[in-house]
Image (cartoon, rainbow, N blue to C red; front, side):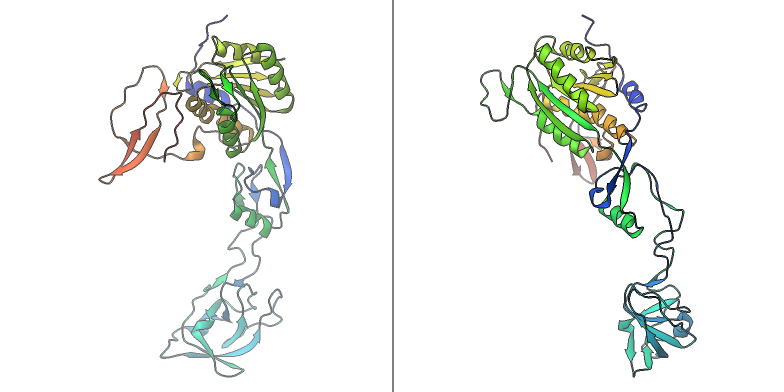
Length: 384
């Protein structure tokens, strides 16, 4: 047997991750695109909205005709028509004229502002009193205010939000190119691990990693494929990993706490056709027993069995891999954002490795503090 740890630094592992190519794109209906990753820059095919439209109910005017008016000194305009919704006006405005218009209506030729209806009063069928001045552009949306033809509106890698779908709809994009979701096989192993509905005996625990990893994969944009519990049996693990490789781009195998369990994971991975060992141990805590093997087009990742260490290793290594397959930057913990805080106490640190410590953020005398949450790496933690 080779020595278990041939550790690399976190930076070395991330350099390997940056070399991973995205999966092929796919076209999906706009209603199915929410939460998906945009595969190509969205470039406006035309100006939006493409015409000047009112943002308020009121009267379309030439702004110069309202200069200087007030409640004590109103102005008077001649009403020449009403703008029908969804139609181009068949008339234009000359000096001293106005037209009734609703929100969303197209401004007549010659109009350059809208006076809100609250600031007007119809004196008769042809005369409108205006009590507030309007500047050019008031209460209207210009032809290019939403988008200009050729403008990059959304960059590739953007996770599509509701407002992004609205923009795509406004541009007439009924289908959109998105990154294919990586399929991720999830395997938990260990003779001591039982299904969640079982009653553990001495030395036994329920399966936690299947459920935490499945949800973490969903939140990262992947499709979890749960392959179940497999004991510390090399032949059974080889068969399950082979099945996963046949249908999934990524396989996550967590656990294996028997003697030499981590080496068993490496043996199982390296037994697959075309297997190439990329990482076998990382100078990080928790998450040191991380294994990455590439087999053909598939990625086999061995994660620690301890539930807290498993999640840290997922966010540190597996999630960036999924992001790279989705065409994103692939920064560790990037989805959570970064915040600066002062440690509430000093922490010892072993030389030669990166350490990740769970903390609770709190404020004290106007200073943001990070309070370490101490506990074994085997302990799971549900904290605010």
